[in-house]
Image (cartoon, rainbow, N blue to C red; front, top):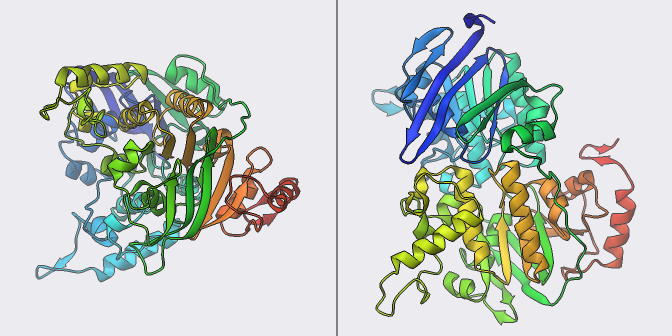
Length: 540
């Protein structure tokens, strides 16, 4: 195929960081109107390659061509001038600005030095309506959910009328219905002649939407294949270099005593006057994985904040191993046996400018093994402990324990948090979107670790938007809708479409009582309904 048929060519790109070659002689060619997937393990160099294309990094070697002509992209402004837009895995949003202000930032319309927002607001609302990306233009970024921030990023790119669209893990925080909508949006954009580069770890999505796929492994290009006709197993083998178990395996286990008890808790909302969590009760027992499922924005975030101490309770009580922790500090909850894998790893999980070693002991630095009686940190002990976790959990970083966490890939940042929280051997592990942004090999490993933690007699409270994850590793599913638990379901007899109905508020399980056991009414309802093939639109 001749050069003029490629809208973007990245030829022999090499990008180095201290201690690591992130991109090693990579060539990627994007056709006009094509959806081209970029697949690879965490730290394989996918986001780095796209950051080179978007002007956030400059490559040491190689050239970039746009429509057959060599171009220099030294900043995101250069990329935007060339019609290249990017939705980042870690959002580039100003927290104290509104949604509208973030979307128009850098391309503002002014008159006599005064911002003219009326036309911008109309365009944003029109794009929001056209593409099904519902946002509140006047909400501040710091007050909205991660899913809403994702929509803001997508609208920011669409607002600029870009021709080449880079989506870096765009579905990581979206619900199944939102993912289907986004897939359709991407198809429509491609039909309009826009060219899309799509970074994803989700093989099913790549197979569903991509025309071609380029696979990276440890900074090198393994090859580019046509997606139609390829299977998830083949692509995962190219990515990881071995066969991967795509479905978690676990044995049935009888739950033991109650570890975490939540009783009638109510948590306020920052977005509106109504409370985000309203009178919620449930138990999590030893030896079980309980999953809170629901569409993003229905109170799951605030529920976790209330349980972990990030937000105060308006009312209700929480006990851990029979001890009331309703008003306990975050450290007190941690030392009492609670671990928390947070939804937002940058905001609540890591200190980005600390080295990896210090991040590994953030909640344990005061323990005698890491701190002397005089209050001085034991640097060698901390580094040795960090090195052990890095090896055990395959956390990839250019300079090992000395690596600044900010420079690591999102997936490896996530693995560092999971290593830290699981190694505390907590009585209750609260895991929110634990595999967000992880590749299939890492997901397989993390699922095994969570199941092993449950098998060791501990309790796990999982909050996930991934239906495959919910159905695969949960022992019990609690569905949240508009701040309330509306159903308790058994994943062994519940079908995806039925779960979707509960998540959308179309069904309620009147037999739910939050005790950690299925009531007769609930089990009967689940059994009856699971025999039917039901979709979100009704009966097929």
